[in-house]
Length: 121
Image (cartoon, rainbow, N blue to C red):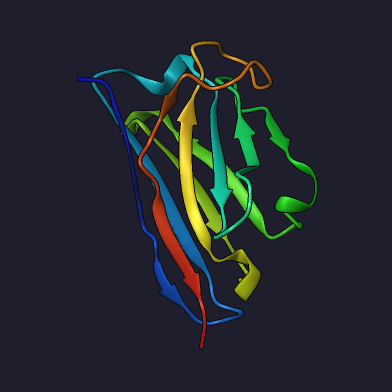
């Protein structure tokens, strides 16, 4: 069964940091572009960042804000999202997704179930 599983979410105070992980089972991430997305309560899902199979990064406008960094570790079949200087408005469910293509921009085909990040004191 093909799966993407997010982990690392939870409660963090404003200004804190968190690292999310996205691990694949049933397939290898090496040849896929992988993206992170988020959806806050009452708002549309928005893209955060995407990384190609070769390591090229695409950031989606204001969603990154210079505070989030995407990376991948193919040996662990995992993609990460490092989040720093977190703000309450970053509170959302964070999803990872994989494209059947190696480059970003072609849409996503496999989706995880999401992990909740809550930024609050």
